[in-house]
Length: 608
Image (cartoon, rainbow, N blue to C red):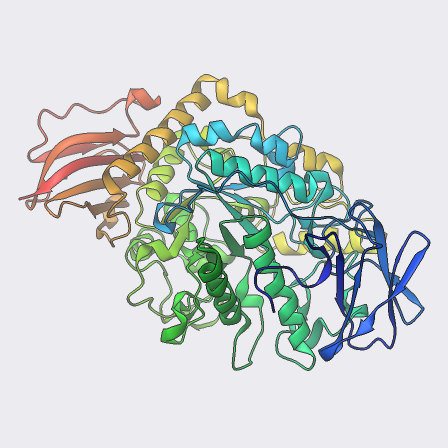
């Protein structure tokens, strides 16, 4: 494998020669057709077929023909202008980049902002995102995270039903639109994270099996057949996804990949696919001098995923931690139903602040087994946390955002809990102004049977947690339209206040905690008051940020610990500045403070 260029699909060199290569190990004859032109490919080793030709040009539509019978789009297609059932478009991914001076920021400085391209702006395109980048810079965001952009059926989808992993969704702006967005982000100092799906391929428009053994019935996933990473014929499958990783980094200048649900990747080979991806990524870094990160979504509470390869791990740089979210929501008053049954509230939130994982070898009622392992030696910048994201919002029956589920005061408290945590914080689009439109699950399939299955599946999924109301129809375009952000809200008084509040929290995090943000805090639980006290150490070992998180509906008086001296108040969510009820008068900050109900307070302090 030449790590510096894409080797599968149709690619163009500097002499405008097309290099055509496809993996079709079961075929006895392979051809490529564009217009009236039909060209035979030559068999190579290990099931590959190839052809160099000057007869195919950028802009040509083409298909592969297997055994004079099956006419199929390129599995490594870079563009599907006519949708997932149409032919492929040959494009040249070379782009006139202006980001030569861009250097990816340290992962520990990432403040993520998750975006669904189709609902983020009125246009629903990469250009629509570009138009709002100054808003994100002004907020203090350092990295945008795009939900999957691989080509999917129709024009409406979360992106996890993608069937052409190399092709950028045409309705979003295609490959060129994504490159333009990344280039502009880098000009503005923003890193770009892309969500990719390597645990399954969507059902509609999925023709991979016609080319080779991309799937295996040895394992199952909740979304369909498992990808064949360790069964017979898996070498070509592994190479396919490794090529995909390298393409995003090399040809699109993506700074980090978020690998969706890696716990659903089944690989019992001696060299796990994630480890191999890590090895190839590291080799690319050596060749190009650029920095790229791999971030895994994983619910196994297994630190092996974020352990370096030389310590027998898989080498991921970081992972999403749902358990912080679950513990935070239950502490804030979310009913302990469904998967929330495993979380007791304040005690589990305290444990997550300390250990990242809540379950580290305890019995899980929901899983009905002992679960998890301590992430010993893992600093907090290995973990991404949030109070809401696409999953936790969209997988509610009515897609309610946090702003609709909790009080205004609790909303501000939860923001403080995330942004003053030692972990890497992630915001979900619109969170920073308290967006009230829902984020629902939506699709745009063309197969009536599949549409019926999706509708039925969503209703069954909600049965354990939601027992009221009618499930919105995922196929209905109105469901998609309801999920669009309402940018006009940000100009309204309360929503403008929330934006300023988030802006202040991010500013304070950068100012006081940036150099020491990922040291584990000292945590004290006041169970009777449903309150947590956090001691966040600063770069100066004599300094700290002392945080009070009162999740109760009662105000109370709190004794200041003897070992600290408060210097000044940094932020108080109950302040009238943030449209709170107003801070109770505290004559001095020597011995006691009055803690308002549902409040987040942070003080600059020093050790005695």
